[in-house]
Length: 189
Image 1 (cartoon, rainbow, N blue to C red):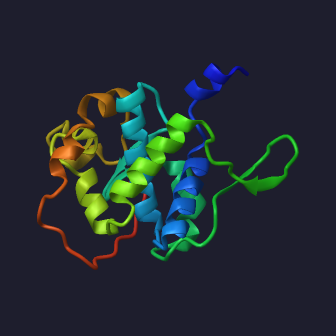
Image 2: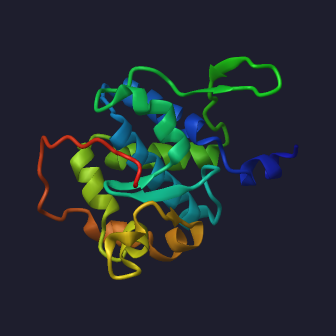
């Protein structure tokens, strides 16, 4: 694989999550599954807007408390509302060996993930949920497209992210945050 090809290929979302967990550990910041989901989503959106390519493979869905990457949710759901203390692992289907998912190594991806952590990594889960719900943003567009909340559980495409991600910047600094409220992310029915 050439260097150009490796830069354009999306990364395993679990590896991106592990990079965020590394930055959080270095900074003494505790992350939950909910906050990690939002940080991975914001990093993915920033990569789509900044570099025109997805950061992670797979997709995000519009769940009640914002965008969720189902594979990441499955990787960390056993932690419940608690602080994440383990790294995401993956199993090689050919060998059956389980190992920690490797973080991205290309400079563009690492820079985007680090930028998102610096800007948002110390925010509460509640604040991150509120930011992910920005009016006119990707999550809001998918959930409210039909005029109802029937959009919960639908995929948030990279095209919608590219078109509407800028709305997250508008919501930074918005009021109406309920500190200390803990949420459990539950898949839409």
